Length: 205
Image (cartoon, rainbow, N blue to C red; front, side, top):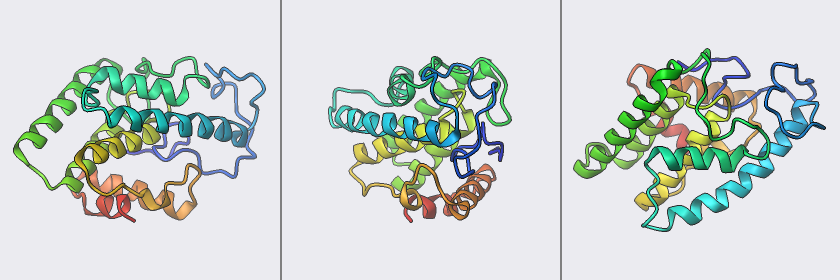
């Protein structure tokens, strides 16, 4: 179930960036000069932009398997590895969103196996498959932070593999407006109940 807590929010923090990071939020932070939310956003955004380039190069290689645990971790490490010491490592603590830490690896394997079966048998139209994949990856919440951005990029890569039009995610902003944030989280809540239409619409808006 998605949370409105800034630390666990799948769309990232909503504030204007002027909020100082508290000591809790700084745990594992590599750049010691980062003090405010806007500074953290800028550092993370730059790293994620570089990771996107690497990820799409990998996705274009048919020999690269993107639907496995190793790639999931490697992508997160690429996205945030120079920002957080724990990047690319499954979380070991409980969060307001996500499964218990001991369930992360088995639940992730089940998800990846399910996606492969869906693809093999054409179980869902592509957009619904992407929405279901994204929603469950967010719900598992494998990492301490960055899960929404990671899960959106994973869906982007799978869309590329499927040869469908790129996903837009309401404009793909890393620091979204309150309206986009509310719409996205609302769509995830509906997906919790098995209703994927709003999430598909958001992915394509």
